[in-house]
Image (cartoon, rainbow, N blue to C red; front, top):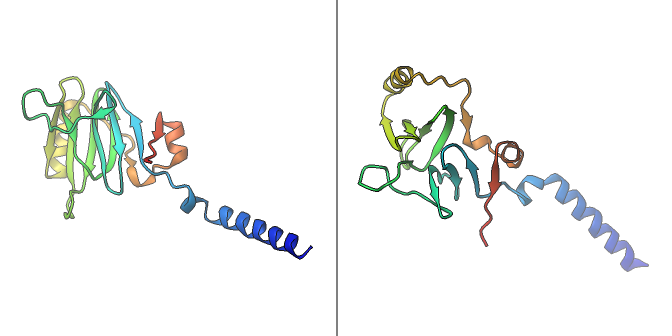
Length: 156
C-alpha cells in the first residue's frame, strides 16, 4: 500500500511538472516555413534563421552574387514580411547591434541589402511594396507554424 502512495505521488508531481513547464519540455525547436516561389525560411538553431531557395530538401547558401548561385537572406533574421513576389527581412548580424535590411525578388532571384532604414524604405516605396505587418521571428511558435504553412524540423 505504501508503494502505491509513492507511485501516485510521483504521477501527480510529474503531471504538475509537465503542465507548468510545457514550453521548456516541448519547445518549438528547429522549423521551416514555406514562403513563395520555392523559398522557405529555416531555423536551424538559436539565431540561425535564414531565407533561401529550397531544392532537393536543401536551402541555398549563396548570396546570388556568383553565376549559378540562388539568392538568399543570411542568418539572424529578426523580422520578415512577404509582399507579392518580394520577401523583406531585417537582420542583426552576428556580433553586431545595428540592423541590416534586405529585399529578395523571388522572380529575379536577386537580393538587395541596405545598411540604412531610410534607403530600405525608399526602395520599398519605389517597388510598390507595402508591409502592413512584420512577423517577428522570436514570436514564431508551434501554433504560428500550424497556421502559416510551417513545420517542425527535429534533429536526431
